[in-house]
Image (cartoon, rainbow, N blue to C red):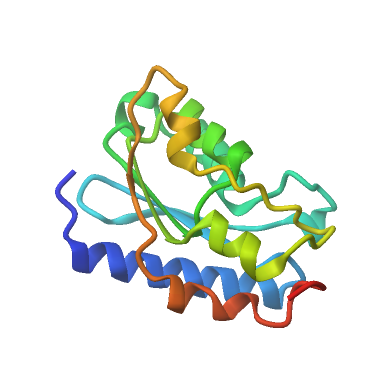
Length: 162
């Protein structure tokens, strides 16, 4: 995977735009995308908790479900997932099981937890994705947090506790 730091930042900014769209559509403000080996966008996904009533409808899990239907694990190992916020334990598991080889995120899960507190809509865990991946048998290269100050504002005023 030969994606430059500038390309990583550009793709992370795209996930923030997806998160804004998710929020405007009545869902939680999270966005994710899958990029191929050269950084081309293959798939995008937003959160669907609000509109579908599925509390597991996180953007990252939605993306990995679609990715695993469309691509084999050998190809996904050469891909990168980008996300506005570090994946939770469930979403980290979906990245692992789909077989994506690299993951880049903007805002850390800890920073999200500090930001929103104990909001019943998102009882955020302080469990870094690196820790989840370390428990597995497949390597996932993790980059982040990269743009926390830019990823944070989409959450302003959304959560009850924030």
